[in-house]
Length: 436
Ligand SMILES: Cc1ncc(COP(=O)(O)O)c(C=O)c1O
Image 1: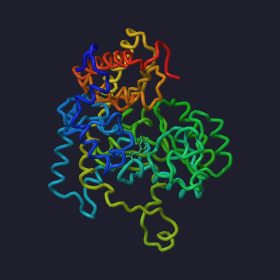
Image 2: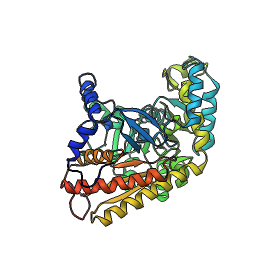
Image 3: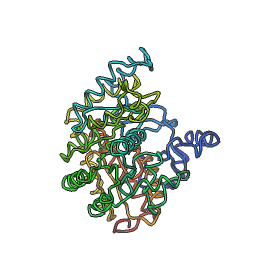
Image 4: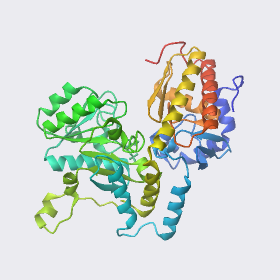
């Protein structure tokens, strides 16, 4: 672990201790754009390259050990290589990874979703969360016969065209190039929590669906949103790709007691393997049915191919994982660990006289530090200096699992203490106050 009196700068120490990762990154850049395979894995001066992981920990190519809070982008509520999930996957891999046919695991997987997620009457599996939200929007449009979707500014729903709208200021510019102008006219981003603006949009009578993520919300707001949407015959989609099985076994909708028409799921759903799903009202999911009716087949239904939909390996992992996470003790254990991290981090900030905030929800911890650095650079520095203390956060967030133990938490708070001190030494933090 790094000491507070380390004489090297953060960057010098990263380059020394992670030299093999630096070499791999140099090899990666010519063949992988920026050397990474997911935007959020980009890191400065370079990302670490990992060789193995188990439980709450992972190890990089230089032999450095980390308490992992990247958590498989939120998929690993049970940590890395949970024995039951791993056993199910190995067993399934031996029996085949793709049958081009139905299998019992996909039925059990769907049954579990309907047993655990309150809104889920029926389920359709996809290969990712992005595909799940894409399908949910298509179902809403097909069901209502309307084109327009209302989403909340800044809410992330994956990387398909519709999800790039209203992601970051300026809100009317998509988050990516390559998005046809026509797409923009079919998605309207509004401020989250602005029920009057929502009412105004719904009153136009052309809104097929409202999609949102629910973390940090309130029961009153969510219920008002659902009631208002239903008054205008608009469907409500809760994107529970992150919150599903994490807030509570039944996700944010169970936690807040508010039921949407459709729910999108991924991440924990498939136990750390690729997979997603749209779940929800039986009459809406009926649009996906294949019937002996030419008119229906050509003009009535929503089609859904997808080579890896409910592939047996992901299904086996998903079934094993959901059988465990349906017990609310799992979410409680992870949330308790996150509470202890929040308390420990706040103590550090108080003791060191640094402003900022340590918030989040359930087992997600969100850190804000007062700095003049742009958020992206601060997050990169924070992640690098935490890594030097043997902890790998997800940018400024920590995604906590149910297997982080006392030793992990003690090491995490100590790493944060050292990190804040080193960021102060390198004049990256403002005294007092919070980032604005
Ligand atoms: C709320 C939300 N929706 C959708 C997605 C997209 O999921 P995937 O990365 O599986 O495509 C994500 C991914 O992080 C997400 O956080």
